[in-house]
Amino acid sequence: MNKISTLATHYISEENNFGFSSKEYSKFKFGSSKIGQLFGDELFKKLINQKNREISSYKKIYVFTSPYDFIPTATNTMFESFFNKLSKHLTSKCVVEKRKIHRNTTYTNDYGSLSKDQRMKLISNDSFNLKNDFEGNELLIFLDDIKITGSHEFVVKKTLKKNRITNDVFFMYHAILNNKNIDPIFENLLNYSYVKGVNEILKIYNKSDFVLNTRFTKYILQLSDDDINYFLLCIDTDGIEAIIIASKGNKYNNIPEYYKNLKKIIKLHNNSMKTSHINSF
Image (cartoon, rainbow, N blue to C red):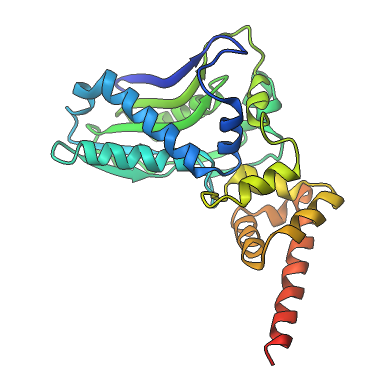
């Protein structure tokens, strides 16, 4: 890589003072696209205020959301608004295109609850796939919601090096933790600041701006028997079908920790379809 820059909307140096609502962030992580769009807009403004002349000097910019397989991460809603704002801003100056890093996840652990060493050990087993079809003079922008230990950024850099990609790179975040004295599990305090259980999940799900993501899906697939039964009673057939399609797309049917609930969801869906078919006669 020629030049690497890092930029964030917020820099966290204190556990109780970080410039944004932890509850709103928690809702974002579990599917609130309205909040994600706001985060993306704020990050765009930060970039333009500080780096407008620099980014305007490129003829082509590729923007990447955080790596995923089939189901996007929460960052994708932030990415969409950021991308749209940047594309419109640079319309007459350069070409801005979307790109994706394909990711094959190998673990079910809640990443936010792990130490730096545990994160590095887990993520090192993941595979990030990025095709090198660049000429070398394009700017590559990688978006993510938060940087706690830098493990994801480390693997992205490793992937770029492996693919002999030498373009200039911007890593951009909603927030960066820049105080090493704060334990990385601080991330989980943010992730679950609002979401305490299935009731909060349903409130997020029932909002018109809800977008299914990986964290929401994995949470559902690990609910207790009582909670998964309650959740399934509260959502419609289309919602159940969407979770099934997403889960199979991410190959969660091959993961034992997820399969029990997924099997229950599929069974309920099949029974619902049979009942609907019978009632149609």
